[in-house]
Image (cartoon, rainbow over all chains, first blue to last red; front, side, top):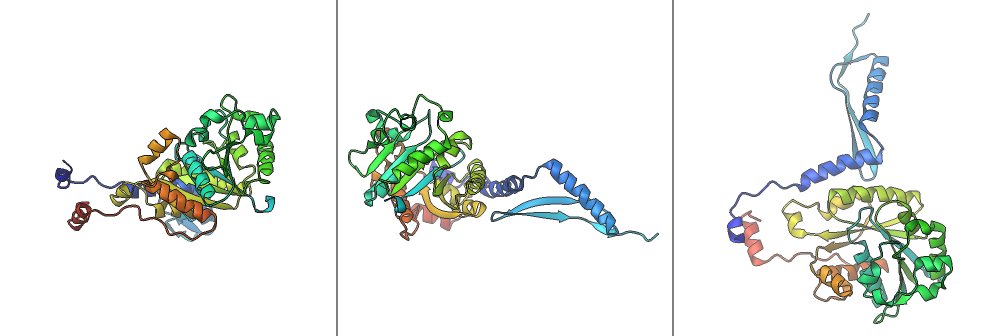
Length: 85
Length: 266
């Protein structure tokens, strides 16, 4: 039976997915971040861009990541300069 | 002996990862190396270490009796028949964790330091009062982790709590590793687990059916010469005493496996 199993298509491996999920879970846990906090963080970043003369022109993404035991908060903010006047 | 005595808490966060199995085997391993070792079971209400060591019929007093002064501490210690260098301070089975405070556990462990080189403290699962009792007297900690998401996440939380309690030396044992599953990409590798937790790797213990046999007989798996997990625990005991011991090769590829790998079907 195991000989026949050798020729059956294999299911996709799951460890990589586990690893990705774990990275995200640990980032949130270590920095005590939740969705409410991230939402507030995003809106403050938009305000900050406004103060510096930028318009936010797309979705602001804030993603915490873990490296060793440090959390890195990555923010992606698509902007353009405000029209003068 | 006080100055050279080391108290190590073995903890995990999540239950069922193999803490008591680890404590029993490491205790015996250190005793076999000639050290005087005391195992302290702080899992009040759910004791296990007595069963792991085959000492369940020899318990008269327990940790709570010693704390409450019902007996002297040495009266509560149960010596192993074959390894008299090894003693167990059992947990109470019919009491509750709240009946003992961290300060009381610390006082007991500090007294044990006068007689033993190593005091291994078996922590209950979770991060509540029982956990705080278990870490109160620890000089260092060993974290037992299984290569699966819930275990790693809980362990990460425990690392934070241990650091907050001032325990700086925290070592990692990755237990119940299945090399075949890792190779197939269905189990987190030891490297990934260590990378996430970012603490020193003390040992890797494979999943081993012989651990069930050892639990059935009350003879820790370290005494089983046929057990790879037993060999892994023996190596960890040597690392605890400061030896540099290479990690075990967990699987030797059979001819069939090699052929399957050649054709990318394994």
